[in-house]
Image (cartoon, rainbow, N blue to C red; front, side, top):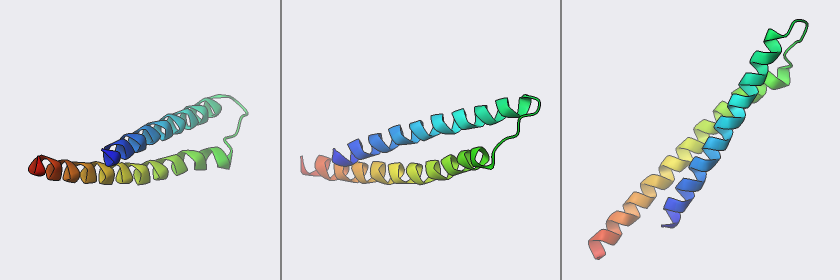
Length: 79
C-alpha cells in the first residue's frame, strides 16, 4: 500500500510539472507574438528542464506502481 501511495504522489508531482511546463510554453508563445519582445534564454530552458524532470518522475512512478503490484500479488497469495 505504501508503494501505491508513493506512485500516486509521483503521478501528482508529474502532473504539477506538466502544468508548469505548459504555463512556461504558453508564456513563450505569448512573448513571441508580442512585437519587440524577446524570449529570455531562461524561459526557453525552463520548458526543456520541465520535460526532462517529467521523464524522471514518470520513471519513478512506474517503478513504484510495479513494486506495488508485486506486493499485492504476494498479499493475494498469502491470503
